[in-house]
Image 1: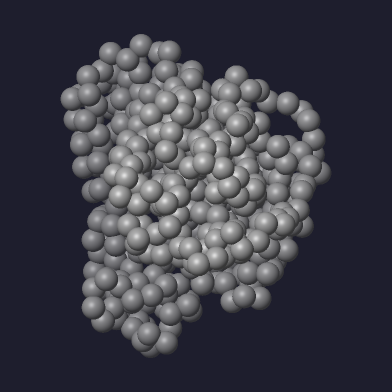
Image 2: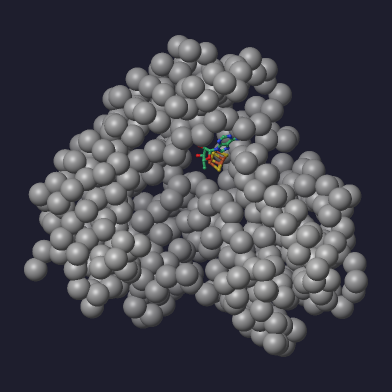
Length: 468
Ligand code: 5AD
Ligand code: SF4
């Protein structure tokens, strides 16, 4: 049994990260069995689930859309806020019931929650019936962990506190035939004071540029139209490698592969250089859509959050992007109710939103995470006041989503068509600026980039007609 240890997880070393190639000698343990995965949280988790699905299928398992009748159920969990925790524990409650009626059911838990000391203690204490647990650093060990869990009748827990090597060549079963996630950097070294990610995902480790380019070229051969370069802080790409290249050089080379669309998430304003902005502006296949979390508009709160920039720095960067990248859409993340946030700090956030008029924003109430620096700060604001702030903030951000969308009415925008919309007889896809659009058009265009005329705007989507 290997349990997570937060003191170890916090440590950062200069030890060289090695590259290992995925290998697995275990075969057929899933023959005749079905599996179901529930994925919570961010794109990183979604992409991990794409690896896990492929590993399970190589072992002989087949996918079952209905968890109630699956032989194996795996929860790929998220730690970012308490409600993500609650969802996973709620699901475990349902699975306990299911397991009491089907004792042979195999239940596993992985992802960020598995990296938390407190969670694993609770699993050992109250959820002994969970068959296996593994963390974010050892997905590649799944066949071995699963085999042990199937062979022995005790819960198999293998969580590494330290990140270890980069594993290349993991099998992958992608959810989309047109859009693909490509990891470029794992972990995060920023330690923003509210954030659990540096503990659950470990230290910053960049993949080699040539491995990333090889993956993109492979995707092009398979007919993919879009890649999203993934990392907790993509702008720090390359800093840990000391090979003389960073995010700007990577973007430049990915652009040269001629994949039609390139996106990247998530960006920390601190590491966003002028060179990157110019690179995005220069290349038509780098999409003019940037997710740039601001978190707060108050300098006092930004400092307490350990964000390393001021609202003025953010506004300067924001204006540069708007000036240099034609039609750029900028989205953000905002937290309200951080410890110490008073009415004036909140007004500063509203004021920043009024200035930036974001195209999209994910807004959250601060959630205290075990072991983070902010967990020690005094929090005087009532939940009721925090909810009021969130409500007020959402009213303002929504107003600008709609206003920005309305500006597109009458324009012809390029759309990567992804499939048939929930509404009958319509297709859906995303514009270059990452806006969802439902439109009337020919099914033969699914998987292609086509011009669509915007006919109407809503807060979270556009309507259109294919431009013949
Ligand atoms: N509480 C609330 N929101 C958080 N985020 C990260 N940690 C917390 C927390 N403890 C938000 C940030 C981040 C996004 C992915 O989640 O806004 O950008
Ligand atoms: Fe968390 Fe992002 Fe800050 Fe890293 S940069 S600590 S992932 S909020």
